Image (cartoon, rainbow, N blue to C red; front, side):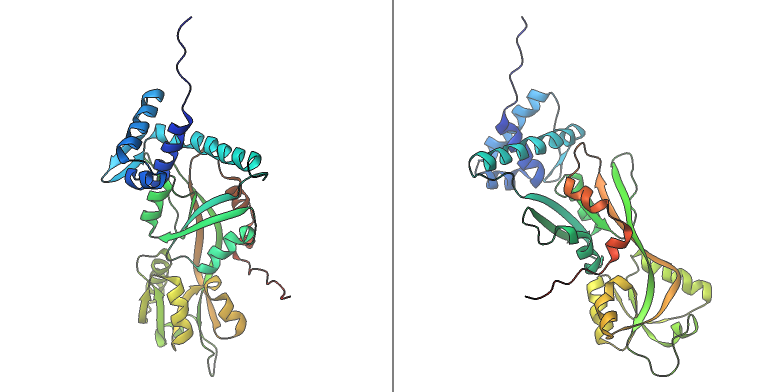
Length: 308
């Protein structure tokens, strides 16, 4: 009988999983309390066993190859099962806490992020990591499987190198908001050029759409500030005597309390919210639970718990 190849080594898979999550050999070695050379040797043994390179280098970062992405999908299942086995037999628990790693672009509404994660908040069996950054930074982490999903306010298209999966979660009309006005109501588009404006930065899809509308109507607005962070735009709208261009979800609390007022919904201008993932053999059940909700739930105000 021909010799059978040796079975896969669990430690090889565990070490590979750790390096893939970190994207960096030195950091993974530090967390595993191994020398970098020993960890590198373990990875090479696994690559020899499967007959494929699992990483390529991009500067100091280790990037998963196509074979590496497939291997990680299996490794996550196997390592997760190993953790669950220990929790069940040694600690008497049915299963470990499930985790979800979420990235959100820095310009995205904090209220929207909270609404997206609302079903997970307060659950004892769930933990999540929420990271912010530029879209390019977050997609890099998603590509190396350091994140499970990226929340963005612009569509990401699949290309020959990246198998992105982009799903629109919700769409909301954008408004001009500000403090209570004296006298007649705000009139679109006549009053746009008569008030100082707080606008998103020129890098945003929202700003581009607004500039196109201004050109269409022949408007020359007075811009008080351009802000690339929605949380800061919200604060400036509250504190300054100016009119802000924002989706209503950003200033939901202020509109409800009467601190800010919606002057008008800007015609033909919407903010869209997207979830970006990569093609995976096993998608997180937690992520499926979040993505399967209707668009209205993504924009809904969270329920307020009664005080005891």
